[in-house]
Length: 86
Image (cartoon, rainbow, N blue to C red; front, top):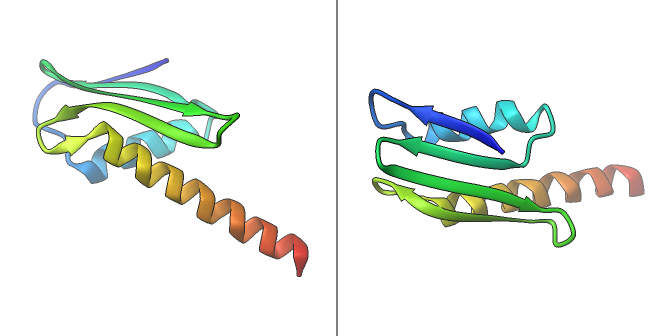
């Protein structure tokens, strides 16, 4: 599990997504993200090809980020399949 701790200002959703993206490039799929006492946990389930998320950092929800990551993965997979089939 990758632990990401934001110590100063509250991270924006864009900052969190960029940080996760950098770790995804290296194959990481489990994240524990914290800001003070607030936290989000994200986990990828490869057998179902879906992300799960829990917790909150202010108005940023773990489930919302998980849904977005799942949608991004499905879109990328579909684009790859379309390339192979063309």
